[in-house]
Length: 171
Image (cartoon, rainbow, N blue to C red):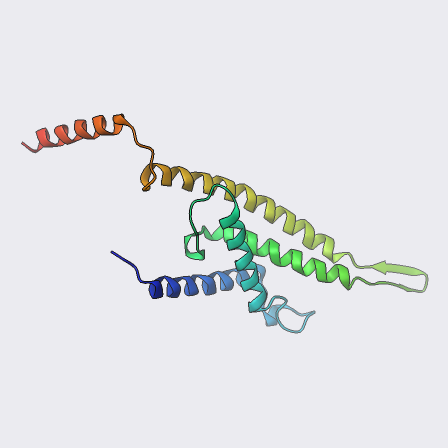
């Protein structure tokens, strides 16, 4: 059954919005929970940029297995990447705005960006390992099941053996 381009676009749009919501849920990035900031730390546009970066990373990493969309990806892997991307982005902003201040002989410097970078690095490490394993498995599946499959004379021998066995059992 053929799927129209419009159907694919609609399901991809819904998948992107769902992933955006799941990333926001995972990071607990809501106005009512962010007591020290005004509003959400990550805008919807920033989360969509993270999703774009996710697709670029997945589709550019070998082996080439076709164009993958958000709807094709494992959710936990997508959340890990988007979270790490957003935390890296936030840490860059924090580093740029880092301020050391002194009062009464006491010097204070907030290194919150280091915590963000540590969490981002662990998430990215987990994502990279999962991506390598997932793409390898997907590549093997496409090699066996896909149009460019691995063919052998044994396929014919085994298929005929099962055909005759099933035909014999039918009687």
